[in-house]
Length: 121
Image (cartoon, rainbow, N blue to C red):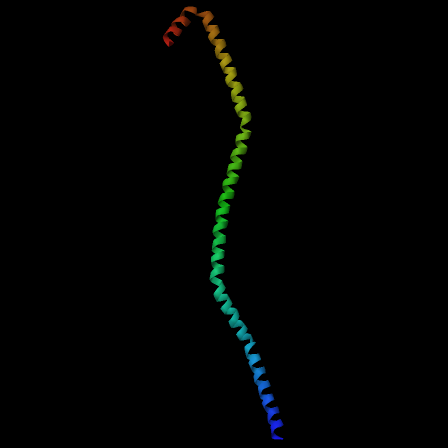
């Protein structure tokens, strides 16, 4: 009879021991320790990724500024077409006026204009 009783006691002890190990292995402090290990291993890589992302952000901000500036310059160039047309018409008008003045001077002072023409050549 002692043997079944002993087996029962051994089973109780092993069950209690297994339960204790299970509780100990899943204790919150062990979980926190494992989290701490994970953070310690992955934090340097995450910090490097963050640094890389900040660098890429700075580069992309610079590129965006450059593109916006170029677009603004191109828009201003297309808008300046009106001014160039105005300058062109004013130049044509001034050339016509100068030709009229030259023609009028040639009629007034025919001898002087011949002298001026010979000096220029």
